Length: 165
Image (tube, rainbow, N blue to C red; front, top):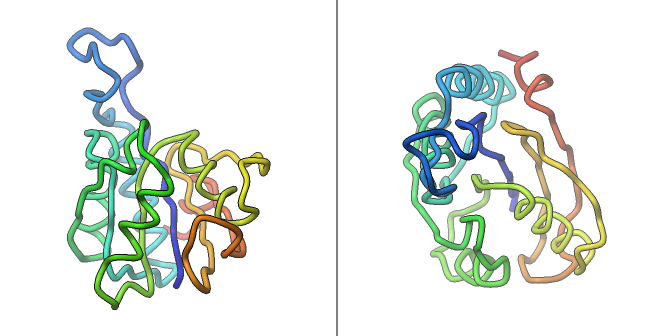
């Protein structure tokens, strides 16, 4: 399976009036525009996803919906991709899905996604990676489980993705 991890785009700052809870923060207009360019970069790279699974937080949901609108497909949501999600439960959720998920996009938050990358590469949280807002990682996974089961194929910054758009 090709597992892609995408960090949400640029969101309104914490403490912005009208968004008292972190879980309510949406993308900024600039964040939406940048994600559209990132998604066009994904399209130019020939990426396609069998399904897109996103955190339900607005900034992640909007990011996933932008990608789905440009690349095609629909978005499903999982609380296990939210900031307080549990990576092991997410892995169980992915494993329990019907077959057909050979190319999967997960949309979420930092530092959760970096922790997931580390868990799948090494079985620990020892690998220090950082996904920039709008950054995309590709892992090749032979048999998805909570432990070393993946290899890192690439990690692109948003600026690199936009080079292809």
